[in-house]
Image (cartoon, chains in turn red, blue):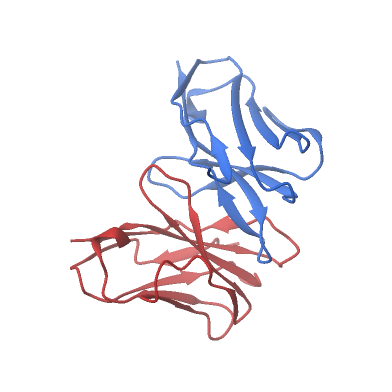
Length: 114
Length: 111
C-alpha cells in the first residue's frame, strides 16, 4: 500500500512568515510522530499523536510550533514567525499502533528560512 | 552527554568486507532498538529492530544487543557499494515510544 506522504517536499520561507507542513500517514495507522532533522544530525522528536489526541509535545522547541491531527488521520505542523534556526528537514512517521513500535517515515519536508 | 551515541565516521570498507557499526545508549530502561539506513537526501528506512539480548540475523544484516553494557551494533556482511549510506541507531523511549536517534555513522563501501 501507499507509504507516508508529506507536502510540500521543499519550502522556502522568508524570516517571519508562517508555514504549514502536511503529513498523510499510512492508512489505518494510529500513531503519528513529527521529527526535526538538522543537517548532519539524527532526527529529533517533536510531538506524538495517538489518533486525534496529541499525547506528547515535549519536543516542540518553542510556542511558535503547533501541530494538529483533527480527524485522526492527516496531520499538520505549523510554524509561526519562522526563524533561520527553523531550517531543517521535518519528518513525519506513523506506526500501526502504540504497542507496535516500528515507525515508517515519510520523505520529509525540507524547510529553508531566509 | 547524548542519550544515543554513535561514531560519526566516516567508515570506509572494501566491497565484500564486513562493516561494523556501533551504538551506545544511556537509558537503562530502554527496551527497543532500531537501525535505520538513510541515503543522502532521503528519509530513514528501517533495516532491523531488536528487543532481546543477543544476535538477530536478517539476510546480510546482524543486529547485536547487550543491555548490560547498553550497547547495540549492526554488522553488514558482504558489503556492497549500494550499502553506502548513513546508518542511524534509534532507541524507543518515553511514554509515546518516540525514537531517540544517534547522529548516525556514514558508511562508504569502496568498489
